[in-house]
Amino acid sequence: MFVNRIFIVSILVLSACFSFAQNKEHKEYHDNKKLAAEGQMTAENKATGDWKFYYESGSLRAEGSFNNDMLNGVFKEYHENGKLKSVGAYKFDKKESLWKEYHANGQLAKEDNYKDGLSEGPYKSYYENGQLESSGNTKDDLLDGEQRSYYANGKLKQVKYISNRRGTGVWKDYYENGQLKLETDYSNRENQKGYSESGKLIYVWEMDSFGSGTEKQYYETGEKEADIFYAGNRLNGNFSFNQYYKNGKNKAIGKYKGGKLHGEIKEFDENGDLKTSYIYENGEMKSKVSH
Image 1 (cartoon, one colour):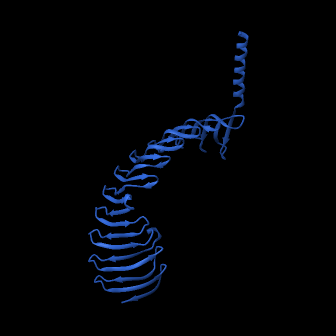
Image 2 (tube, rainbow, N blue to C red):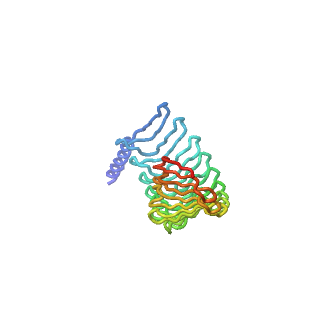
Image 3 (cartoon, helix red, strand yellow):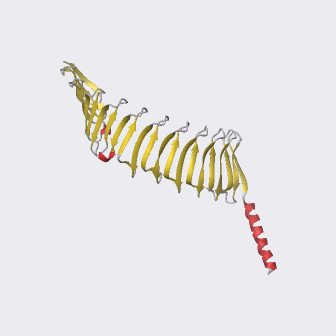
């Protein structure tokens, strides 16, 4: 019985030594002959154990552990100046749990959570001065729910909402002085209001689900500056317009086709009298008549 136990232990020790002997040191080099990577490879030429990677300058670029050619465990990346660039964990070659990224000056740049290699859960990003740049939530590697972004001075820049890859709810954009800049209602066919830095209403979009609708533009003093009528998707550049002087008189009337002036264009003086008329074809002026 005692002899058998010695024999079994001996076999186990020999197996372990034989397995270790199968691993071999492996090194790779940059074109400038400096070390690029070093670690161990199995007999099947698969990365295993601890590995290190280097910049052409020779400074450490990254370090982590492999198992059967897949990253597993803590992985660290470094800026060329030696400061930590990112740190997190891999599980079967996929990012897992909390990851942190850093600016070259050492300040935290981003915090993100991962599950099976996909961003999942709350995240935050930061400016180099340490000020919060953005925050929100992700699901299956896509933005989900409320998202906020900030200026470098800490002022709120935007609040938006995402659901099923689409905008939803009321989005708000702000100027750096804190004044509301845009208000976009995605729950009501992407209607939008725009404001000047002084807080004056300067335009209103009212669109249907196909992109057809109207845009009203205003002078900062409150008078209407233009009416724009979109036919079909506004991005196709097909629309007609009426421009106005501050006294309410017509300033110009015309149409665009594919983003280019097309058809008859009329210009008026401040009394509302016709001043000049043009004929355009796909952005090219064909005739001009002064009145």
